[in-house]
Picture 1 (cartoon, helix red, strand yellow):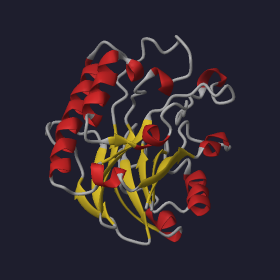
Picture 2 (cartoon, rainbow, N blue to C red):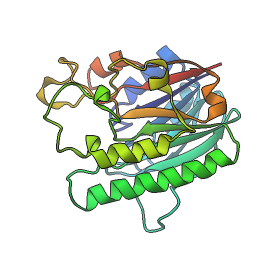
Picture 3 (cartoon, rainbow, N blue to C red):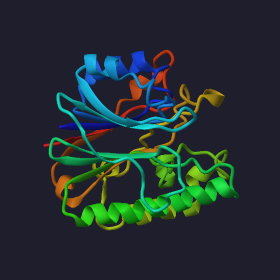
Picture 4 (cartoon, one colour):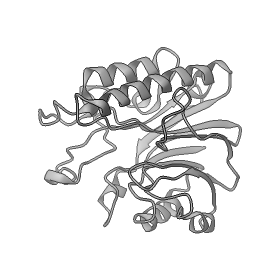
Length: 256
């Protein structure tokens, strides 16, 4: 079973790229972030023609999340991260798919910092950690996947000082991610590739894709039962090099 996460950076603008990748790789489940689409404009028909059914929470600006399932219908279980009823940003969706609970997240970027956007990021990650703990304690097999907007360690960013003030790599952001993973979740890519520089995001600016100046911001976290079934994990890097590509590439896992 192949499960992927992909910050598509505008699902309608990148639709051809998305459909081509779905045809080439045949993932069973896909978590999409940064739809930049209203609910009405989400390309459900085109995605269905590719063999996938979907649930989604759209938002026109920078947000929006979706879960796609190949050959089955995802059953929506939650469409917002609990803990703050005033939060109107579409950054969280979860669904039951083929016996698993799939959680798709798009964590706040947090820039500029210091300031309210960084405070919102840290508060959002704290809410996620609390809810993820509740999900894990149910005993359900859970995949927590998405763009967390955190490069957890120095191994997850190319050697540079140019990002030193960015919210993606601040000690507070990394500490929040460590608390989320804790002792009970498994960072799937890092589990199978403990010492490799693996990136999922290359900024459009400063020639960063040709220079392989990337960051690992997209993660798949597994409950202990699923970690025992993990047999593969990686990134479809070549997707980032296509014409009109998102600035992210799909990250994926395989479960036996």
